[in-house]
Length: 160
Image (cartoon, rainbow, N blue to C red; front, side, top):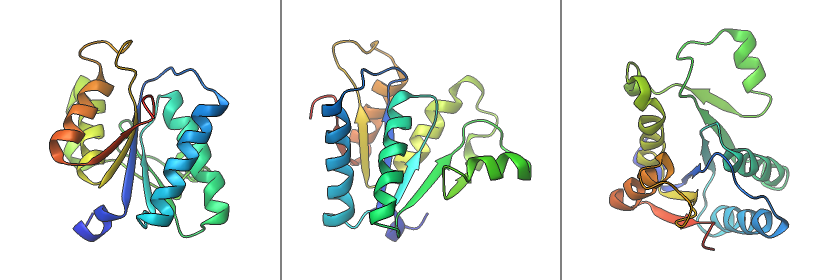
């Protein structure tokens, strides 16, 4: 991504399991819509494997009806090479998908590296990290620390 694109990009990082509520859904929607209308964010990067990602994808997909210029991009941490059938399946939910070349061969660290790639390519990062219940060295906690260290504008929905 170019630095121009990074200015208008947001990624999502969150715990695999979250307690969904109407208040949480509303908070996510308000934060995302503010990024679209006030910060001109037009690209949203998603990982996988978490309730939080799924909820954010649902929200961005709903907002895309109102803001058709926004893009949903799935950054894969699995399957560096995919066939057309699987790609077509993914593109029913996302506008694009790719596997970052830099994470090839990273083994068990693939999700950490994928998250860092998304953070490196985003100005904004919406996260869900419950400080009280997240394990000390959880992937989410590591990603949030990395985002803050890199200067990404980070919003923790669990605290919002």
